[in-house]
Length: 122
Image (cartoon, rainbow, N blue to C red):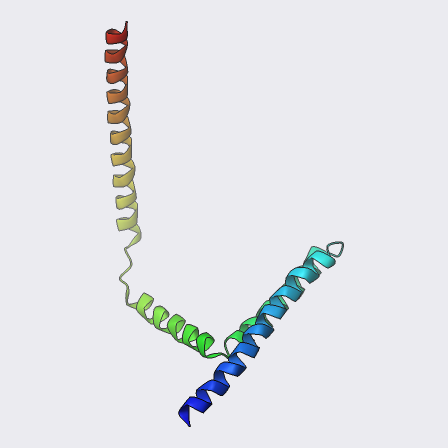
């Protein structure tokens, strides 16, 4: 009995994903068809279609799994210890200093090798 319920869900999910694809296609074709209209109206139309398509997609099993993934990711992001502004500034300055030093070293090495090659070649 459980397999039958999953089969019905997957059949409805396929229909829902087809509906999402149709809504996206309508948005793309409609935006192209109404190219002469104001950009504001076209953006509003595309946003409305995107919200409807997103709502339909969230009703599927994969859409619900994606929503759960987003909620779990948000919880994990809240657990991250973010650096302070001072730590970020200091780290950025260190990276910039190291990049400049390496650039100067590579420029010097390139110049030296170029000079040596020009001496050998003549």
